Length: 221
Image 1 (tube, rainbow, N blue to C red):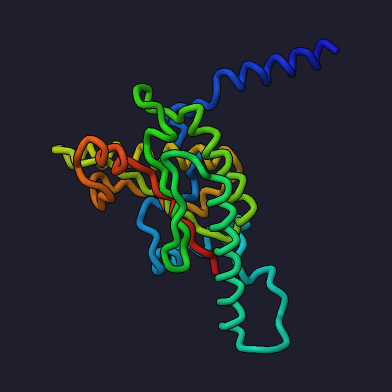
Image 2 (image 1 turned 120 degrees about the horizontal axis):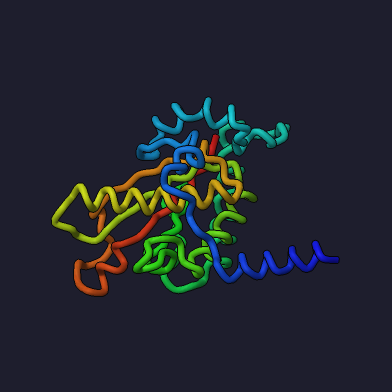
């Protein structure tokens, strides 16, 4: 009885305090297996042994042999259907301000405006961001035959190195969160792109939009 009360109290305290990122010195542990480079076709091929070695799945690994049609066409159909279902589930589950879900060819991109998931002053994941990233992690656990590119961006800054460091910190912070919520780091590509690739004007409103994290999700074949 006393243990049950203690457990309930502990849960209540956790809910109140919310998520706190671990010490930065431990991030290498949580991101062990992640690649710190752009996710390209070449880098995905290079990463495949590490990904499979960690228990990663591919779209065709559980696909039963079809008795008709071309194998490449069948595999492509499986991929299109899989990514479409992933896109719809993300879209339906992430209808909140500062978050959008887009299609980019075969890939699906989740755009998270910084202020939607990270505290403005403290720089850590916010309470609202914890809820959003928990939803993302839950869906990524379900659709686990995928690679992830987690890219951080800032608005225009005079110091390009500072912008890159800040954007990388955002991307790594999200990567650590996902790792702690059962997303294998071997699926991840993590990059900080600084002020590159703005998606809005560099005015007072546009700057808030350009400060963002993009999670690009690609099928693992």
